[in-house]
Image 1 (cartoon, rainbow, N blue to C red):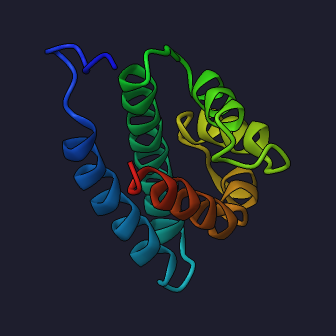
Image 2 (image 1 turned 30 degrees about the vertical axis):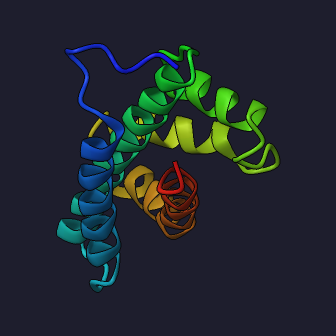
Length: 132
């Protein structure tokens, strides 16, 4: 097995950050919806998505594989049979891209409405990765 390159933190360190980000994401979703909490939740979603990708990438590197984008990392995870192919990963990836655009009003509301399901998906990713 190849270990992560010196410039990349270990999976253990990344998982600590992923868990923290996931916990904050879950907390913000418990607030009553307002423009402030919607925007904060979208930002937390983006952070959590980034941490998920970093963790998957780290695991891929440890397994001797490579994935550069979130889509590639998800595809690798599906190939490893530890994430389900039927999950709407493409939709999550598109939502992540849109959230980075600092959406407002109706567009932000549309993305916000998906965040509970994405939070559950991140929990699945976390629960798979924590076993490594």
